[in-house]
Amino acid sequence: MNVAPFPRARFIVQRAELCFAVAPLPIHYRQYGGFAHGTHAFLPAGVTVDVMDGDRSVAKGVSVALLPGHMPGIQGGRVEPEDGTYQIASDNVPLYVNWQGEPPSLAHIPSSLHVDFEAYFSSFARMECLADYVLPGHDMPVLASPAYPARLG
Image 1 (cartoon, one colour):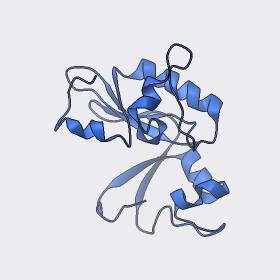
Image 2 (cartoon, one colour):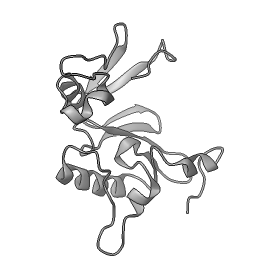
Image 3 (cartoon, helix red, strand yellow):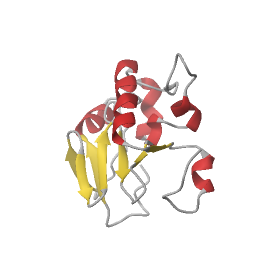
Image 4 (cartoon, one colour):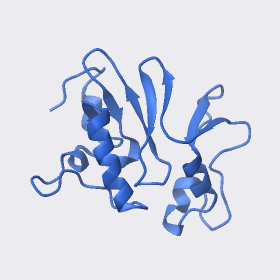
């Protein structure tokens, strides 16, 4: 977790994610700062953490939603500008192709790194209800617009 650039930040973290970070599956060690079982640096000393369970409003028009599947406590940010609601999907939707799926049989495609497919598909269904637009976490076309709201294709 790259927290150094944000020394006064308050980090909102799901309890399920913290529990998983303490003893991740071997394939997830690197995501939590450990390269061998028992070495963890997920949250360095001095970090302010607000532990939560589920969805929460953070500020007017800004909220987070628990969206498990990729990881047990992964969450996505949601913002509500004047043209609709945007779900910032984090690692749940790494690329637009993951959200666009392979119609008609597969509406969305989970990433290959996951902990629970059933939860993943439930989270996709939640995002369909929560937002008008879904922004992937790792797709460069997200940066094509210098600011949002922007109409996405």
